[in-house]
Image (cartoon, rainbow, N blue to C red; front, top):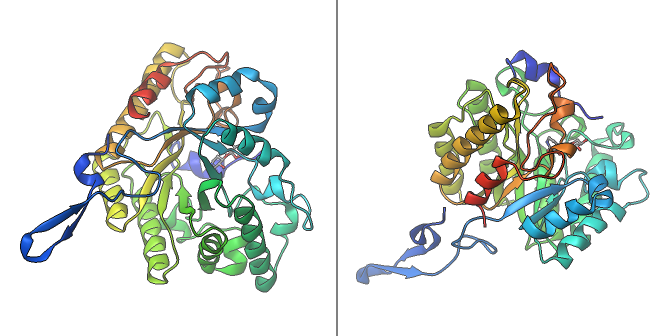
Length: 367
Ligand code: XIL
């Protein structure tokens, strides 16, 4: 079971609508004033609420018919939760195992749901043979081959990709800017450029994202993380390597507040650079709340509302995606365990697949 650097989390104490105006490009038409063109912000982006995305875990997808029913009914975007990670695709060096990914992707296509790919490079969920590589030349070749094969296979089918995931250090103030791990340690900061260039080459029409967590509050650590993301974006742009968006994972803590002004400023800076913003892994960590489910659901709704109000105030988001659908299959209970025996309630549906207040809230912000 994957455990995220939990000691770090504990040590830091705890761890629109698109307005018509912003949807329309305005260019100067010389003496005559300005000429307004109906050009949209991006390919699949329209002047409506963003789609509600759901990350799909393979086990319940295979074994719980109700999960597939709810996906058909409610999801406007599908994200294979683990099936496109290196650990799922690359058990051995010589062979790709696309079985699980194909099951989810075929289902989404049959239902006309766009697919977001997650993730081409992550410090975690790598097969042990990748973590053991020490030659920069070999690792670069393997990374290029992987991205060429995976993005190439789904070219024209996967609309957006998390090209790199969590490449910023948990705390850049004390750890330096970059996340430690095989990619950074062997290739240096170039790993990000290699990955984006390879993805752009494999599918020139795909929208390419950098994805990361803890970008929502206004602590000094979060500000440093935001700065690191902006630096990475600017560096790619300077080198003419395509990047189209930033994914905010939004694993929100019920005991933390959104840094409204800071978040709006960050998102606007990204938009000024021409980037889109997506909410990619929304859920709420409720480990510090009292056990009463009514109290917890209320706090979860308040936490998400505060965040979504701020982020949509800064302009349109590409999608709002939750990291799973039912509390029964959430990573939160394992990685952020409670002191009591109460079951975590981070997601829009409960363990018995009943709709929760969080679902009603998300529906107000999505199509
Ligand atoms: C998690 C999955 O939800 C788990 O099923 C898996 O065991 C580990 O990974 N940030 C990410 C996601 O980008 O890929 C992680 O997903 C959760 C944190």
